[in-house]
Length: 59
Length: 190
Length: 195
Image: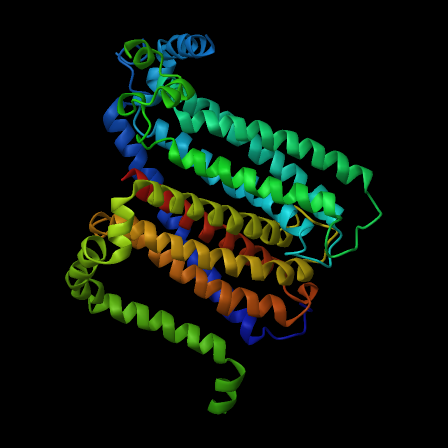
């Protein structure tokens, strides 16, 4: 788009809708990551990714 | 003989603690499986676009060799991820997978698909430049593309069948199926 | 003046009205109002409609349709990655992105139709379960929003003018949003299977 041209209808609509969807989906995935981390922390304590009682790192 | 060897190998894998960790962990198996399935979009997605181009179904005004060359890298990355995650999935459930009829058919189809891809690539190189701007590829490449589509549809379908238990060793009595699925114990009990 | 604005910025105004409608419906708790009424429909689909019965009676048919769903997902993914990574300048840098956008849209539409039809069949077999799943409803929302985005926003803009005339950052935002949408639809679908 050249500097002097005004934003057209389709461009404004595209900018607005993609901004809303982008922010919404990023927010969704961030909350998913946070809740998953919380659940894993609850299950294993800090940084214990696998549920293995034989793992010397666990207990 | 080969069935026994495969089973022993699977039991050896199963005895390893990392195999059990992968299966028992919260989400670890699911994440590997989800990655395996979602990477279909990269690997098979790119492959299908190349095959569709050979058949003239997509982008007829772009040279076919351009499509094949530009999508080669994403496709290889996709298949590399598929292979690694696929191996991890087998590693997490070695005994079930080795004794799964669908898994065995899937592996055979995979080998066929790779042989086909190899032949296809050789033909593509041989025909390079002679037909690039044609909307449809020459007949031998079209055949290769159709075979590739059919084989990969088969691979995905077999992959989807693996978690189902219709022909699990404990549910089958037909000796041929038991042998094909590698159900060593059930065969001995017959 | 007003009619001029209406004509010149019709798409933007419609988008604004749709957003306002969504906000108003949320404020009057529209979702909560219609949710209980949907349960009988989902139960009918699962237990009485032919697709629900077919899918639950014959596991092999269900699994085969699932495979079809995956294959159409893969096709959608291939097209989305090829066109959107082109807009981001990662692949196909020597092919005009106008050509790619136009030339792949038909396959995208076809794959989306197959994915939706097979998806309805898959959901029908477990309709009594997905009704209670938040992730299912989220997937449906993203699918609806994503389809609207592609067909009423992205495709019309990209087909209306040479891409060199569009702000490159807008193109990048469109591409990333599109990848994010279809990744979310696919990933939530996989999660429905786990739940």
